[in-house]
Length: 381
Image 1 (spheres, rainbow, N blue to C red):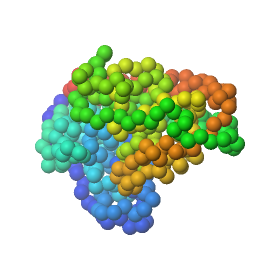
Image 2 (cartoon, one colour; image 1 turned 30 degrees about the vertical axis):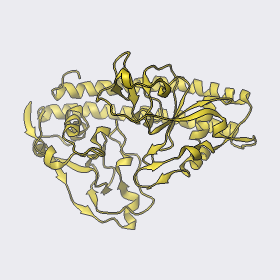
Image 3 (cartoon, rainbow, N blue to C red; image 1 turned 180 degrees about the vertical axis):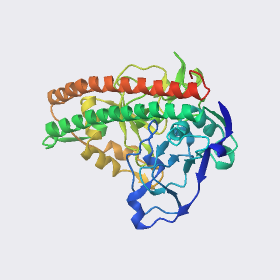
Image 4 (cartoon, one colour; image 1 turned 90 degrees about the horizontal axis):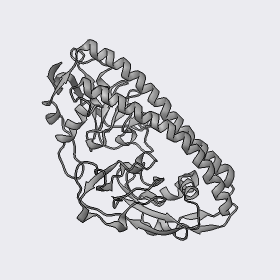
């Protein structure tokens, strides 16, 4: 392998424009980039974006340099504009294959270094002046082309798996509407459907996830996929652990403060977990007198989400917050428990299919990560 400075590998395109109304439909923001996939499937803005935005061309690599630890990398799906909190990167084709370039930018080799050189406390940001001098080893162009072919096929398969997961979610939503869509039952405020709505704890944490038998605080990314991911946590000491903030099986976790896209996300904790607290950006609810999976489906339904998102306070472009007092008043239709249980049984069957698909996706992600790490000099990390 040959070692290169990053500015020998990539060009940082800084061309900008002030958005016009016609640019709204071709705007990609950091909120539209999803960790773990290069595919950009969401875009657009309800109002004309303010300030200068980066010009992007179809096929450019979009890198979220602000909060680089979120590891957001995508391929521009069209000519348009991109958030100024990102970077528009293009390959220098004398040293890097264009098809391999996006996989390099999304690799641990690059992203770990980008995170390391990020500056700032609230929103750490990776700057070009620091990135450009970093050095990376690349395999030969022929080897890059070979890897790009393998990784591209894997990326297509990942897209199929993600599509199947989305279909499973759509099936559950359709079943919910079919069974409960007419809302002919009485309503109760959410506060009467749960024992309490608890706020998590804010504290300084270590960098890595907790070890076996250790203690940790969940990150908001534990909720962001729509499924509870216990491994998304940061380590804390036993002395700092608070059992009253511990997550338990059957809890509902609700993202109360973050970007408009994430706020209102609700997940169910399906299995017993120990030693995990929830953070101050999250509400923890323990359902009572209603089935937890039914309540989860209602809070994810179009009707529930419309009501929840209408409670959000703050800037529609940055951080928003849902107050506990307002969430407590969320009207929840309460059908007979027998009907709720019938729906929960249906969800459990669908979840078996989702589990199998998710397992296959996780294994494919692990395999592609291992291939990249080996070929870029990280071994089996």
